[in-house]
Amino acid sequence: MVRDFFMNKRLLIFILLALSFLPFFQKQAEGNGGAEGPKNKVEITTKKLDPEAEILAAWLAKYHSPLQYHAQDFIDAARVYNLDWKLVASIAGVESTFGKFIPGGYNGWGWGVYGTQAIYFRSWREGIFTVSKGLRENYVNKGLTEPYAMNRIYAASSHWGGNVTYFMNDLEKFAANYQFPESFVKTSAQPQIAVISGKLVY
Image (cartoon, rainbow, N blue to C red; front, side, top):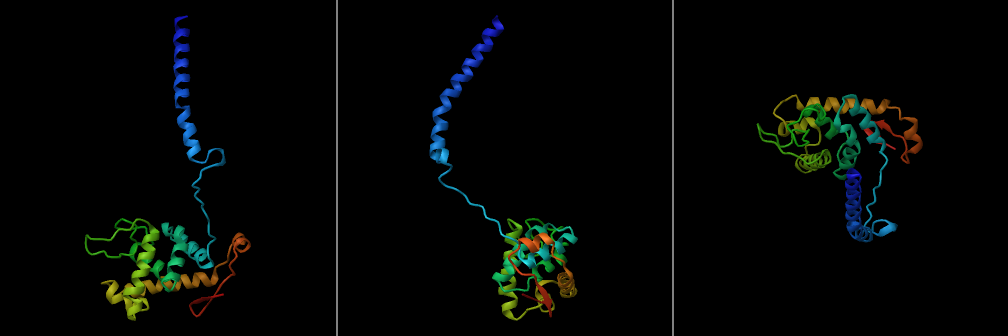
């Protein structure tokens, strides 16, 4: 009997507490648009991979690279800064085994790394775009348009340019032989691509 009394008392207290919070929840619902949903809606859109991004993602996956999930960022940055789409990913191959061994801060390009000092980025995307911008402004615009020419400023090792070029050539061969998955061909609005003289053409 005593136990039932305390059980009922607890239940009553719980109900009273719930009722006391009811106006608060109603107000919150009204502020968010009530039954019609929130007034400030956030729309999330998805973008299909470009053909080059599909190829790059598959190539980076061969190396188990975390950068494979940012293939479209490489392509977008290359277009914004008018760079060879293979360059920045290939530099990451030389500098960090495609983002697997980094000093921290999503810096897979040895960008601004001097001894124990390093520039850290907040995301892979930020790193990709920052490095692409830097290559355009500090290298390509000054006539250093390919890895061998970039070598003397970018890296102390005399093998750097050759190593970057190796990865770029490897990616080019991979692209030339790449078979698009049937699902990509069906869902992509982009045409398939071919590689001619090292340049992608539609």
